[in-house]
Length: 94
Image (cartoon, rainbow, N blue to C red; front, side, top):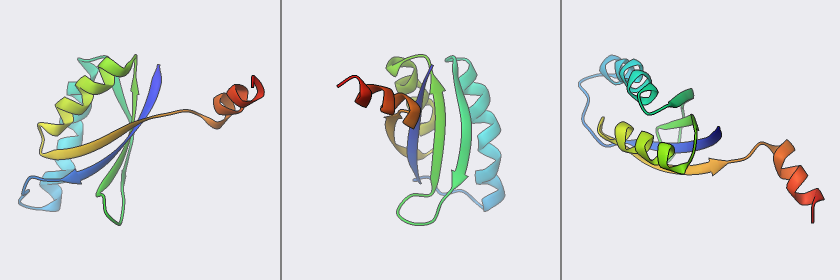
């Protein structure tokens, strides 16, 4: 499985913070139907509201996961990420 990081901006008006917080369980369940896992969720300060770490079989699954999450009024910028150990192995092969 590959890992993806998504920077998220809340686009929909939620009534309160509790309503916004309650969507993550629904999102996790929906992602499982696309064989992806929402590994971590972080609230962040700055230009974006949340950082998500997603495990997906491939880019197509990551794309489907992004589309599912965006239906909840969350705009996402998703990037494939690579652990430093794997990156170091690529550099050594040069």
